[in-house]
Image (cartoon, one colour):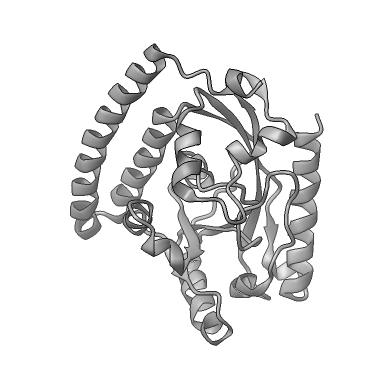
Length: 263
């Protein structure tokens, strides 16, 4: 069965490395225009990042199926999503011009860390002494009309279940009038075959997995299908505190994810 998953033929390799060359050339151009547009037009700058995410999906043949309506709000939105892999970023980023909230250690990753910085990622340390400052940054960006993505699990899961949500960063919208839209990411098939429990580690990146070896295995997959559910949006003002809001979001995301993987 594993051999069928990694059936990367000679033709597949030629196609992949040709695409990789094209990808690198276009990304270098995008980086140049991104730095230029940062000073000229913030909206165009965000669109360039979205184009980059689409290129990543094109390179590794990820097909995204979107389900549900994306809430439109000029004041900005906080999207809350489950988190399975580093490829969740280009999956979501290809749909909308988004800003992601990530752990500060990501900034130090070779290549990926630099790309995250170029992509306007908000880096946080998740330390109690910094939480007030970090939640103010998140709230300020939402207030200014940004679309922010938060992964409340705090880390990536094994893809079998949704981990318990942490409520700390949701304090940025606690008892305020902000729109929050839950998102559910579900990887369904690889190379046309169902993503069963034993193959989930090919997509999911968790525990002490080495990034380099995981990425190499990911590149050997010919195609990946992923579904992104946009669930009904809620208002942060409808909850008495961040813990009740966190519990509600965990429940609706977990319920939809369980439905998706059990179909």
